[in-house]
Length: 202
Image 1 (tube, one colour):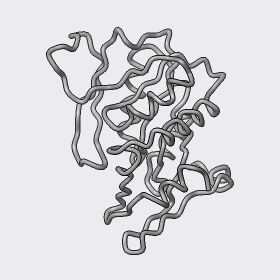
Image 2: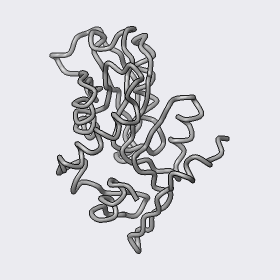
Image 3: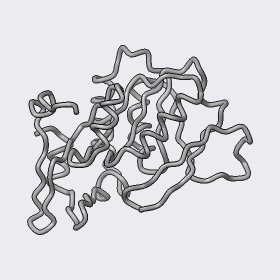
Image 4: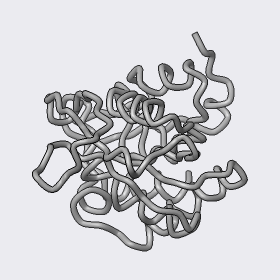
């Protein structure tokens, strides 16, 4: 069991509807030591890929992306979920659906912050159905840049997102993959590294 899985078991809360609450350390109150560990691990997994920019989506992905960027020493760009008067008119736009909030949002990135020269590492906190990731991928494509990798803190392996993204050919690394949760007992089942290697793509 790795450091993130241990933290999830210790402080995560399973709720009905396949909801895993990690607000005690990841997306409300932030455990800075844990974030540093996560950033360093993403660096270990993706170094050498020429990454010069990290892209995430507001709000929960920002802290993880910033922790990761410290090791890569590159800028972070985050997609905004609403247009504001101080945004440029020249925008890259994608529509994404949130599994947690059951809402659809247009997310935007100013064209001046992503270009064809960029090799982008996409970072996010959760992967469920993959809608947010596909939106971020489409933004990188529209900029002319390339997706050099995708780093996820927690993947819900029992939902389709991970398989969908991997089948598209993107290098996807998740620090913890949850294969099952029981809201009554609080039990969380993680996919082992060996299980991940043996997963059949189909």
